[in-house]
Image (tube, rainbow over all chains, first blue to last red; front, side, top):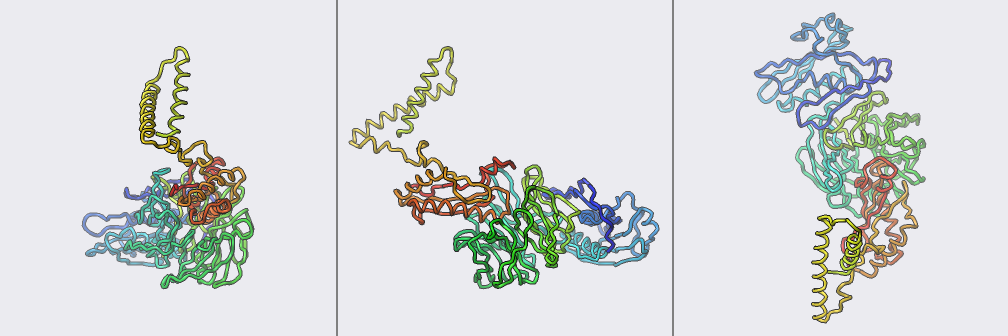
Length: 429
Length: 186
């Protein structure tokens, strides 16, 4: 892909007031890149009775802008859209400054909608691809995210992550009136759905590799316990309720095991639970705090936080029982590591004078790059394509979500209209 | 009716008398109501005392305050505060913890929950562990002072249950705490 020479600039633009009233998250791109690629996305023509339930072209355009890599040309500046791929005339699109063009149409077929769309490289005067995807009629918005993934991949060569979902914890009220919810929404914050409600805290949601289940910590029994919750069926079971704390669950890449931190023997250590048998294997044996395990994509290495050397720092350990090796040395503390999908870097929370910020550690060169400049940036989670990291931050004391591109250049905020949101987890694709 | 209320009454009456003694100060509606309530309670207390005497009960035992409810007792203190990222119990909290330990050893049926909390500076799961370590530090001191292990429950909420919500040193200091909660009092 042709990624432009990039300079950070301020966009300061409220991008999406995401459609229906049910939407709880509002997305703002606070910093993008100069040299974002101009793309024209025409309205997707509805070839059926009445009108479409979603403006697919608008959703696709908004997704592309949120990635920070694209600049979408305003609709009123677009020339008349061609009916199909044959009507494409590159000069008309070049004249409005578009480097790429997406045209599309939708046709209802019984209880489905068939979305057909084409991606053109305007400068090269060629069609990159044409696609037809059928989606259930009530899932047109999901279809639009799928279209966005394909467009993103056609232009950049990297997989899109727009059809992934995010889980997060919502909090409303204060003091004894506080209410906690576990929410699942589309990657743009739309279609939020409350999976679980409690008047006791909810923590640490993490997705299963098949994106069907979540694990999280709930205090519903007045202590930390680990639960598994199926997103589709709502089936729910308790996985860990040992004495002491039960925390920081995270699924192995093969979906068969869970790494978690338990203090059943006095101090928190990392354990691996076989989900079929329920058997536990103790991985670390220290008198320090060992927690926040994260798996390497091949499932062979666990990264975790430990304060065995005094302050919390990130360590790695080859399974089943290799020696623990310290990875972080910068800043006064480090924790909550999340591993990039390619396994080559960690993003983690670095503590220092300025507060808590996200940093990326290149596992090969051991170079550390600061990604954010907040004071309470925590709970990072990688997008499944590795392009972005979503995390918890604060805005004037209120908990909101932030996201940052892997290179630290594109920044967005996702704020709830009501209450606070935190601990986001990006689903696998 | 118990002695606390009695003493409260005496103090209240004294206060009201003092207030009355001040020239040109009318009683507010609230003060008048308080006086009426106080008078009614005094009457009820006197009646209860006479009835108790009539039944031959010792007045003193009947009027004993539950020490857990006595605001003058060190047992009224239920909060231990900590320094940032530390689980060391500062010496100023030792007398209070000794008093609770003594109470627990004298009341073998009593059960105390030790709830550990942290401020928001730190990662969430680490803080959950830190809160537990603080509660365990309190438990160790209470064990040494006579509380039985079976009387003490350790729970950590990490940073999830703050009591102060501003992002200031003052709020953080209030949030770094272990709360002593009696699940069973005797």
